[in-house]
Length: 141
Image (cartoon, rainbow, N blue to C red; front, side, top):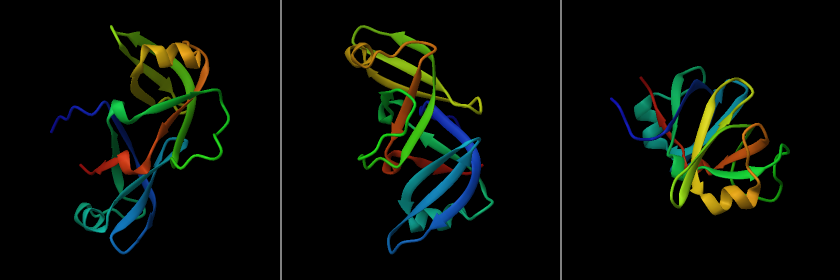
C-alpha cells in the first residue's frame, strides 16, 4: 500500500504504556524515539509489543520546527527530533523543510515561507522537528 504521508520511519517498538482507552507506543527509529498516542484497540489489532517492527507515519503538515539544537522545555509535544536542515523547497506561500537526523533518517515538514525566514532555517544549520504524539500513526508490514 502506498500512502500520501511524507514521513514513514521504520523502527522497533521499545515500549508500550497501556491506558484505559489509549496507549503510548515508543518506537526506536535509529537514534531517536518516536512516541505515538493511539487507541488500545489499534495497539492490539496491530500486534504492537516490545520488539515488534513498525512504522511511524507522520504527515508533513503535522511537523513543526524550532531553530537550534537543544530540546525545548515547557512544551507538551512529546517528540523532538534534533537534526540538521538538509533541504528547503519554497513554494508560493508554503515550503518544505527536511531535517537529516544523526542516524541518517529524514523528517520533512510543511510550513510557511514566512516561518522559514522568521526561524532562520537554512541548509546546514541545526533545527528540531516537533511532532505531537497524537499526530503519529503506526503501521506494520
